[in-house]
Length: 445
Image 1 (cartoon, rainbow, N blue to C red):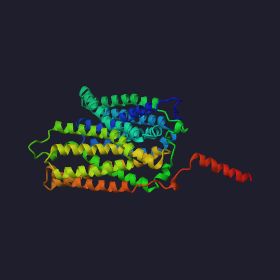
Image 2: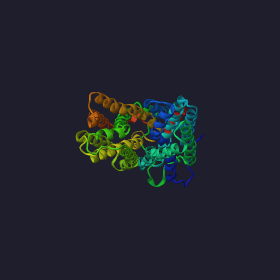
Image 3: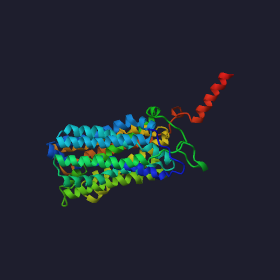
Image 4: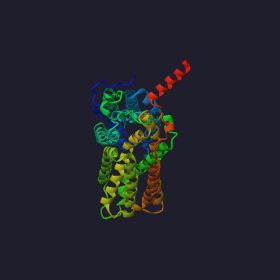
């Protein structure tokens, strides 16, 4: 499937909606928790077992993005979005079959493995194209799309809950909900497949910035640079800090204020989770757009430095101020989302657009690592503190200080980022043509 080149006069503002249709769909992954209690009840699963499809999906997201990034660059966004559509929708259909037959391994295989491949390929499918269309505002462009991944749960969560209420929360009702998801998302993602276009390669007239200006670095060369690994650490530390709160948000706020005169109810904790999702989504477009104005290194100084400050305020305040806890958590989650949305533009600044999608895919292995590391730190320490007889905010104090340390590591890694050495650059097309002409002249002489 050859990449569709935009005809003359094609509006670049048609590309973000194409990307958004894919990211809003695969963003359903953040709403998996809606299916956990019904699955546990209907199939007799433990909490750990019911989390397995989501965990495998996130692991496959990172792996498929890393190994499939080069294919995405080579075959173009339409091919990638088509693969994402097929895998993500098929994952739901397999899960529907697994729920209907009460074969949980089919749900793990469908949603976790097959659907996870769709997550990874779909996540990186529009990134390179958006950056090429918006060389003047790459942070804003990628922020629009990646905002969809953060906001997908805001649509999927109530929608899934309503379906389970209508169809029932037994195995057949869950199967029907999975089936509707698979069919609906396939139609919605198809809009992106049909709408996406790649820009023409010629330089714009009138001195306008081009996506093809500046140094270009291949994915193979990028992973050999210290800049790539500095950014890997930056992303891993930022995501670890954010996901540490996101994964345990409801029980954390409940535990924090359990011993106060105004404990947090279950419904209020659910509202807190919704607020965090909104902050996550808003940060993706807001902070990434800001990075176009103040620069990528400066915005990550904010994410990592101010993020450490927010964690410090939570740790020091303890259960003394509920508004302060909520405000700091919202800021941290906005940085979490902003970090995801800004990293493609940071990669473009350092490595160019030549294979930025493939480079981004390889960098997302940091997300897979953080997805395990963040929850492990918070949950393991909370369990150990509880065994030691502690409760309330003291369950999380050590975790909060560890997050401050991790963000400090990320801050240092960001400061170490420098322009990529020219030896890693891919020769410009005109340079290659000149070299070929020189060789030909020498041979004919």
